[in-house]
Length: 138
Image 1: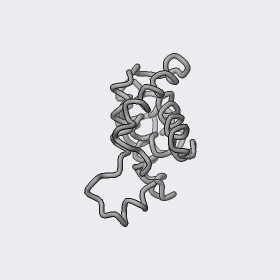
Image 2: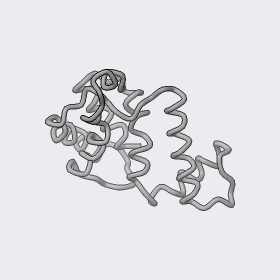
Image 3: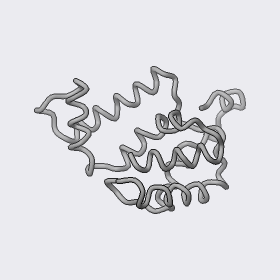
């Protein structure tokens, strides 16, 4: 969870994005980026949530759990973008997140600021969206 919180903190500090909302937006992206290092832990969560059983492989259990998080976001109308993010701010935001996460948060995969930039870019509203849809993005 470390990078979820670190990136969320930077979004809140720079743009006043509510911390819980930023965490919800980011969670599946960061879980996917952690890859196989967290598959066993996500399988345990999937089992506890009643989404999988002990016969499920760690990889499948992780995929099931992440998909459930994505579906929950949809149910609560939580998007995948943050309309406030500006491309030119991304290196600064990633630097802040890097300093917040290392060594303050336990993380299963160490990333540096340049690797953290991927999360901010993923949150950018696509330039090809019509203006009326851009305003509807979270």
